[in-house]
Image 1: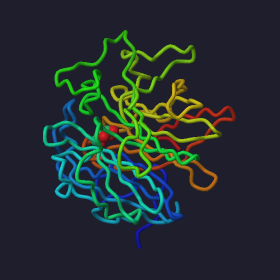
Image 2: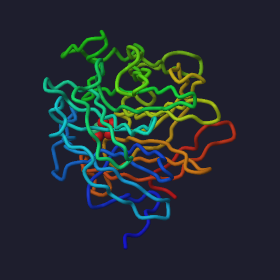
Image 3: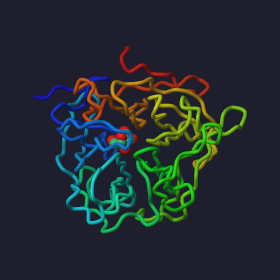
Image 4: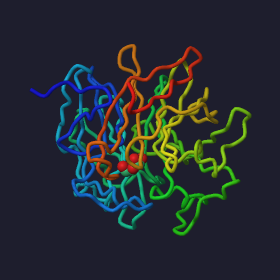
Length: 327
Ligand code: FUB
């Protein structure tokens, strides 16, 4: 019998997993991670070491239960438009269908976002024949709001190619803004009713400091890098993300799901391994952070493991910073 998972311990150890998007579906906790390859690959800034080829979905009946691996839910070979690198996915539910949103490089090497559907939260998922028209970059995260509107958030710097879309078209040799210029923000778009297309052209999200000034590209402790997640707490929208080169998970808050968001602070201090990526989910009365590190592989960047821990808010709605290696 597999033992229950413990906070801050890998959810599973038989495969490498990363980028966990957690949701409560049908009374269970479902985790939609990336599935890191078994091979140790050399790291570079383009992210070539993240050469994932399929997705496995994990679930927990409760936090006292063992973690179930539901096997391959979607494979690269079954996605007509994709050539490689199945990076961080997310899932959503609407009108009896589960949707898996995922980034991959198309046959020209450009990251796009695809969607696949299933009648079950554990899959298998059937991909749409083409990527979402007008999609680009990586790390989709979907918020189904209380009023039924669904928003997709996405974007990542460096290997995630967000710098290359500043004009609205792909410019292969485009660089990011100067350090003193406003940082690039993640993108947001309303999804269509059937969840398969963007209902509007994606907009850039503005993240500002407490004085209302845009965070600058050189402000690597706070500026957006990749891995957006939006959750709602006490009527406010919390946009959380990775700072990439400074390896923190941080957050900003807004009364509007499309921002502007005001920077607030750090959720998780750096983990073992270069990347940090997360989701935040309410289970019953409590809130949880799902995240990853490279502890299972002894620090190999492209061999990560998904973990969870409880997340706590202060009375004023700010989040108490978590150290991944302290109780
Ligand atoms: O797992 C591949 C990439 O690494 C993800 O898309 C990023 O968020 C980072 O975790």
